[in-house]
Length: 165
Image (cartoon, rainbow, N blue to C red; front, side, top):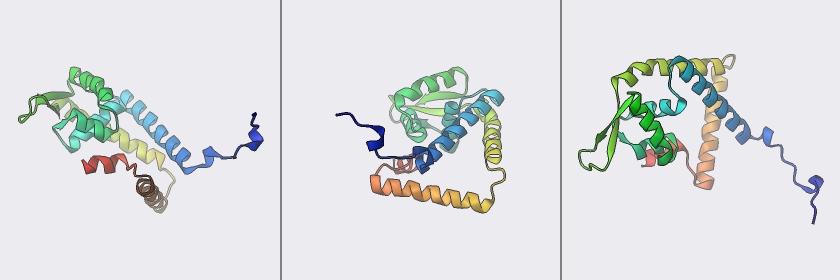
């Protein structure tokens, strides 16, 4: 049986909240990655690892992977490269020598302010000409959408998932 386009349900995905949020998130990520590479010499993936370790030094690779929302196998080459570049070091866990704890080096510490300056610059540029009230409303609305998705579909958000562990 041949189905013609006219028989199909019409859906303007470009007008959906999910599409707009996803496109906006991708734009933020591409912009931050570009700025970090240009100004600091690190990738957005490396920045996510550094940000996780700034908040909580001594995480395991698995804990970092959970926090940044990637599979452990995806994180290994990032950690390896960062260790080669002198940005972090692995140390065996004192209770379980099979587990490595990861710590930032002074080199990574010295780059942190430049990394956050990139993020702040992007945030300021992206919200230019948008009132604080509109930004606050947007943030509240996005949090409600996230909570609804978590409640009705039991998928959680990265932040909720990492806090539960």
